[in-house]
Image 1 (cartoon, rainbow, N blue to C red):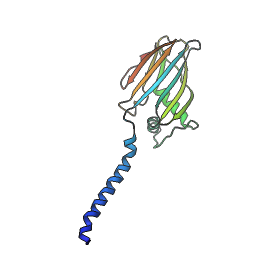
Image 2 (cartoon, rainbow, N blue to C red):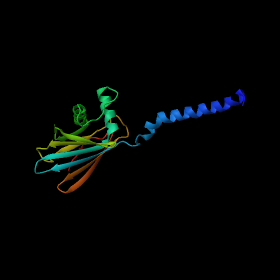
Image 3 (tube, one colour):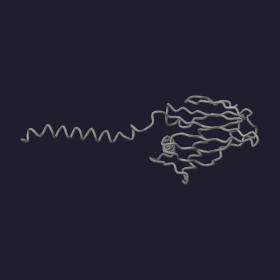
Image 4 (spheres, helix red, strand yellow):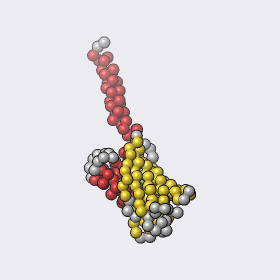
Length: 174
């Protein structure tokens, strides 16, 4: 083969390698999930007058929110790290339980990383029971415009559900 005949083959090989490199660079984006949601279980324990709270969502979404809030590139979730303080501050600002005008304080219990998901465990004392209790769940709204937060409320064997999307006002807990 002469030099002039090899040039088209070389150009073709370079194009294929370039497409392959672009595909590999986009792989993490392609693997990202297409929806943004959280699911919360809110158990009201009448005898103790407390809410037991379990929040499940995508770990990478929370890491993005914490990174944005901290102004650093890569905050990583780690059950043993100092990110728990940053995380609790974030949760207290986005997951707000109130009785009347008084905000109930979220207490940190812990967290678990399970695959791509993260589970947060919290509790809040509710001295007035369920009387005039409202919830605002703006978790991850500061990062994703399509974020939807579902809250399943359990009280004395009854279940109700609340759904929060960007722009929603606080909703009554019953």
